[in-house]
Image (cartoon, rainbow, N blue to C red; front, side):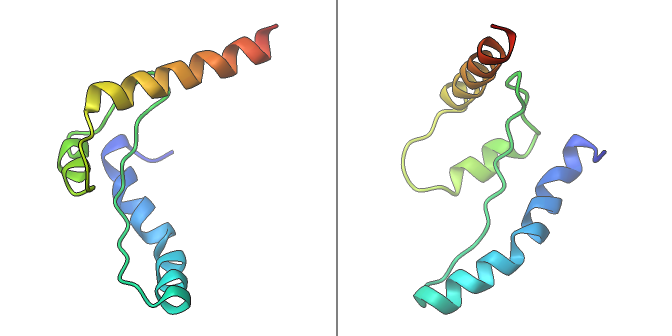
Length: 80
């Protein structure tokens, strides 16, 4: 299991092939922005920096809330 601080680097390397394929197919410039939010809303120290690279207005509080609500939905489906 990877440490939480190493996950963003891992994600960038995992999606490298996909990035290259999208660049070739669509002839656009792409980059991977690793935004990882845990099931309980935990985030890495660098998440705020990565979120600032995404165009638009994104609040960490709202992203955490979405992750927690998604986790609750999955648990309700599994436990009922």
